[in-house]
Length: 458
Image (cartoon, rainbow, N blue to C red; front, side, top):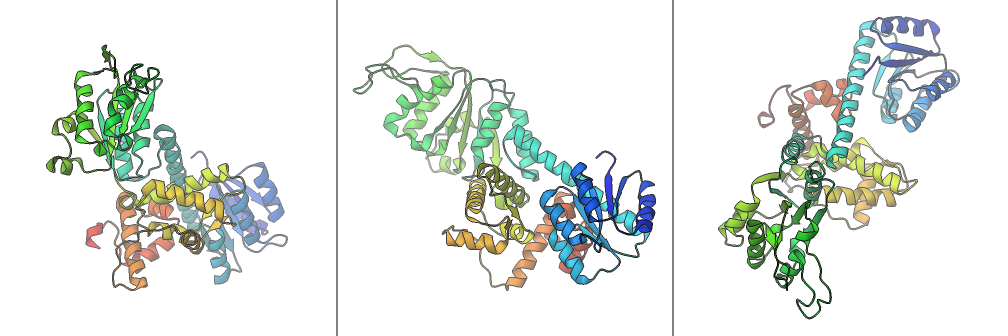
């Protein structure tokens, strides 16, 4: 972050000047506005990183300005300041999206600490958002979890090579996206990326579909047709659901891989191959080997290098960023449907099992974008729309805990996992969770979480 820019909005000029002097000593860029209208005018000319906003002003109340800022300038972080505050004001400010709330008279050190922590949160959030954009542009996937960082590192390492890659993972985890990323980051990126779903090929059509045929090769072969192998020449061939091939089909593919050539049906001349092979499956191929349902020689041929995509339930940090990305995408696709998830909606999503993984999140966000008539998506609204449309979720296994106990257990597990992920950094954890730091400290105390204490010790 360059020199942080802060706009102080307060109708008390003496207080504003004192606050300006204190903050300028820390090399912050400071602007002043004496009332709500001046503040809104300044925001139209340029956007600060942080808005220090008085609650009570003569023309427009601070809460009104806060509401407008959250709608028109959601990227601006707001800290409320007031000498006439009440608990009701503080609660309302936090509900409207304020990051923190300070009461006058304000101690200079308290202000400096709050501003420093808030600006650090802003910087971390921007770095995180920039990382999401970079990952999306480079890999076509959303992921902030350590599991996805490992996947990205493997893609970077394997993409420049010509080694066959086996991608494994449950349905909907993004195996096709990983395959496309491997191709797009390879030297073959300007050549074809050809995909075929092996589960959809009957044994009788394997050779014609994959290797092509000459005119007259069979009754309906009125003209020659190239197979997927020939179409992928000099590029990448992605054989999805390789585990669904029959043993007969496996043997035919193995032969082509070993000889690095194919012969079209009805043709006597073989064609040499120059192809990068990528395979994917949601099956347990080692179990299939043991049961005699997958050829051992083919397994070793395709499993030179491997990438495993773990399910969302094992990388819950990715759920909310993914949902927010899809909401933004569908907001652009369906004009007038821009949505925002409330904190309780995010918590509700984090509690779901997401058996359909990324594909299910995408489906749910599209449904929400189309069917909801409000820009705020709450947990209640999310649940009602999904149940109304018969969307089935697989909840975590039921227990005999009370709802309160189950919620506490989830919160404790999730907060501790984020803390572990960020090496116990409370400030960054608060930013990821969308909480101010004082709120997070209260949560940690309430849930009995000690900083630096591993998850399995809680």
